[in-house]
Image (cartoon, rainbow, N blue to C red; front, side):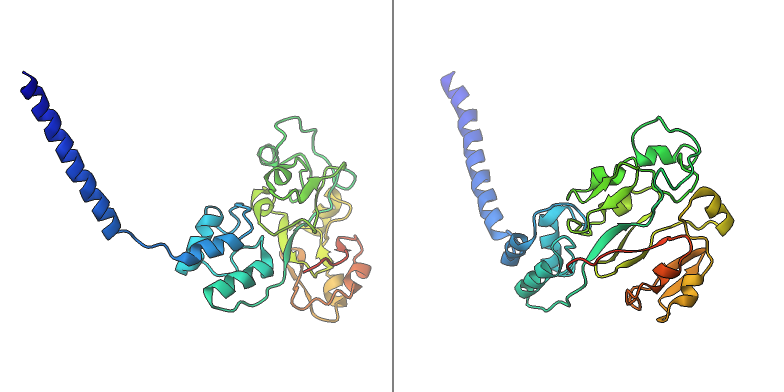
Length: 269
């Protein structure tokens, strides 16, 4: 009786031992060696894990860079300094690109834009935009319910007391989270050196803009004609700055009759 019990147990034990040894040998023989540069690149990355690069965190980006699937300057959070260090690890140079920052292209706070109705729903811009395109008369106006503020991993954007989202450009890393979260598409990435912005994103005709907002672009094209550097164009009822040509001279700001073109101080690159 005892022998009948021991025989299966010993047989299973022996088979398990043989299989275990086999798997151990196979794992060593067929193991894929990890490129040491992955850990080096990962060490350089800022550990924000924000996903702005399009990869699942900094670990995913490090692997993608080493495998050649992502450029050495893919981390917008780290900027040119991190790109240079990653480039050194990978044995390649990288051009120093200008720092970008997010900018809310709207000044339509509660004092400037007509309200169609009092919104009392979910405190979220996406939800509000699904109700008659939002409570503000201008279809391209900031709804001010803080969706961008909640998705920002760097505490770089906040809604002020007049219901308008404002970017802290010193904290902004151009991670693009607020840009993709805004249902009105009014947050854009612009060069940090740019002082001049068209703070309006409405494509309505001038008469409609005047009825909805006190400081919207009415399409008069005075700025286009006044710019001595041909840096302002006009498309789909809205003025548009060519940042490669703009010299921050401020003439367009002075000429704009509705003050929809603004100027602010530059920040570090």
